[in-house]
Length: 369
Length: 138
Image (cartoon, rainbow over the protein chains, first blue to last red):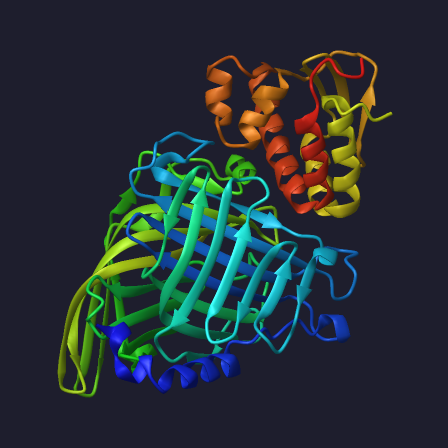
């Protein structure tokens, strides 16, 4: 099994932690010291446990409203949880087993240490030492999270992702971690020990509502003994007629072993859509402005990458979706983050070795309304 | 004077929106300009007159749109337990007006929601309204 790999369990664990500490630290906005406003960064975690999927996202966005003080930010935590077999019904335990919320914090309740991975948003905390520590208790929903996420792979640092309306976006990915800890939803407690997880961190200067969209996802194998894992992303304009970046990243064991770039990658999607009887949305009040149950998420998506003698195909079949709605900063609209649960089959050949596995995916399709 | 009821919640939210989300507030007022909206929520009976410059509570006069609701039906919308269509079809929210005015009201309501989520202080105000019990401070 990957977690018993002596490279990881032994001396390399320290190298992983050091590499993450060197790449994944909080950058912070320069606007408080006279630099350009419009900075955003977020630390994202996705946990795929047996009975529950959990997304936790810590973000800091410059406050670009007219009259905002220089350096003012909006700190937020987004939590989205999908319970298998949970009761249905809007409002309480969500339709299709979804629950969660978007919580914003006052500036005075945020303590953020730039240059480290260390932040407090009121009583909620994110830390990194040799592992990530995530402690969150939502204010308006009965959800409590206490997790340690131990990295199993090296990070990938992807700078210079082009954007149409501003400087490039940066991305750090740690696609495979092992979780210990608990999640409580009301009176339901989940022990998440051993669950696989994914983490990434983005930062850059842009506004929600700018001319950008993306389709992103990862695949973690069902069988923990499979050494492979994959992350893919396609960043486009809003109309999705122009691809700005297109990448497939492949890890074997702890190592990033292949990056397919732009012209080496093709994506194809179904003409039909994933359809669900209802669509869970947070924050709930914003659902009034983006009603309906049809998400612009394809019924399937295939990503094919070929370069030299290496090739990889990922076919993802979404089966559930919830939406995180973030107010646009350029207009009275919303940026819609479709958070999609999917099954993915991966096959190909990397460095002469056959690759074939099935796994679970979280995909994200950015849309606008 | 703030009593925590619907009328004071709504008027305070307009004031907060005007200072914290002025673009959305201007859009709200622009969309509903030249219209009067009467809102009857629990014990509160409030008539608002919109102009492009702002909104003010006025005494009476025939409204373009009349809305009857309860604190519960409003919080059901805010918390996504009901959609607007479901609330209207279930007679939990009653809307009266000419079709054109009702369409404009819907556009105004959307601008209001956009403004409320962009004005950080409205979250605390909403918390206060949630804790209000209709009939308090009367």
